[in-house]
Amino acid sequence: MKSQVLTLADVGEWGSGGTPLASRGEYYGGEIPWLIIEDLNDGIVESSRKTITALGLENSAAKIVPQGTILMAMYGSIGKLGVAGMPCATNQAIAYCKCDTSQIDRQYLFFWLFHERNRFVYAGRGGTQQNISQEFLKDYPIRLPSLADQRRIAARLEQADRLRRTRRYALELADAFLPAAFLEMFGDPANNPKGWPLLPFGDVCTISDRMVDPREDVFADLPQVSSEDIESISGYLGPLLSARQKGVISVNFLVDPNDILFSKIRPKLRKVAYPGQKVLCSADIYPIAVDASKCTLPYMLFYLRSGWFSGIVEKLAEARSNIPKINRDELSKQYIPVPPLSLQRRFADLVREHERLRAMQREALRQAEHLFQALLHDAFADGAA
Image (cartoon, rainbow, N blue to C red; front, top):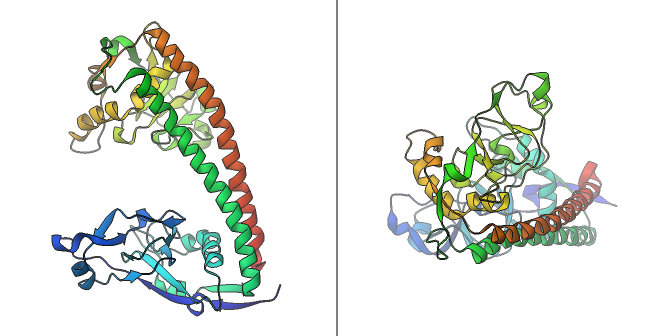
């Protein structure tokens, strides 16, 4: 496949945006979408967290880029991508490229930048926040095949990308099902519309106090869970490393297979998990045992994950002057609505079936991600494009 080596400056106009003065209220809340790095989603960006006014645009380095412009983070989350789904402005942390379509296919460039992301991250400079410069990007070499070959490569990658996005969306929909089923069956915990009896947390749950030394041989090879291992809201736990593999030296809780893990640090993140096996967990997590004569484990798990309960403990945690966290006494003083066990067991049946299907969906997503990465490698690795 014949190709030529150019720089990114050769294939498009590169630039970045700016930030209107934060103290000037009249610069914000207008009709112009103003993107920050958190808005980038490695796909088409169709909304922004913030908007600015024409006056804000005029009095800053921000500038409007047209729909279809490729966007890339230069700070912090280096290499995070987006494609403007509407005319918009950006801040200075985002580089934009208006492609020269006589030389490069826009979709081809998007996927090539995706492939090069790790190299951009590695090249990052800076102390508190890694960054790359526009000059670095403009001088960066790119090997270009013919436009026809670019379009062929981009079309193949687009199919694989669409598949993985579809799988991811299906998983997101699945994750929304059980919280909705919980509300339908038990009502909103905020007002307990079905009038379930309220019991003190301490009557329904017990917070473990069994601390062990993870360096001891009897514990060192158990999986170890930290807050970082728990996915927010869904509570998903990925593959876990042992305490020995992590090099954990501080005391940990010993967790029974039927314990729930509740992260006491920044509870607004709603990190509540069920490992289903004997594990160790760091001291920033409470292992919680549920009294099976009063509550099923799935009911308590989803109650603790609920936005309502999170809101309560978040207020208590935020009252602390340093790191937001909830202590044992505060947690034990909360009241739990307790529906009939027969209804809780029906919900538990739903949870089991849902988890079976969700495991299948996660595997389908893993395969789609693997396919996409393999095609990226084939297209761009070692100058293959």
